[in-house]
Length: 158
Image 1: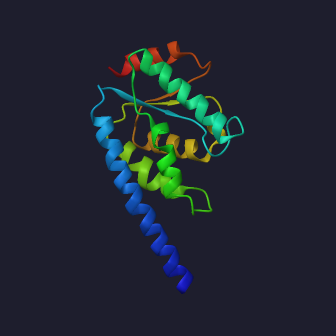
Image 2: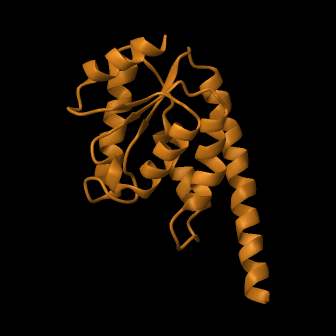
């Protein structure tokens, strides 16, 4: 009984802290020129085999898109704080999906999702894909890591 109470308290703490952070993220997104896209790809599971390499790949695509004038939600800028909130979470970070990414996708502020190669190897990216489909958010699968592919998709959202 005590361990169940402790688990509930911990989940409640994650929910509270992630909810506060998602409010900040939603404010950031609302300040971006519409339409706004979000890149989806492996971070903690799958992909290139390490969190650092996965984040570098994701970050480079976000920066390339921004240089081309594409409005992008930069979730990478939240990674440190998300990690701090969930540092004691020893299972897969479903609270991150439930209390951070889910409200963002349900907000209607993300106009399209761009999936990086190897997204299928990531638990979180698979979750984002399923959420995007259920919310009918347009989805694009990046094949060659070319920003021109993203630009073509982005133009269809305007």
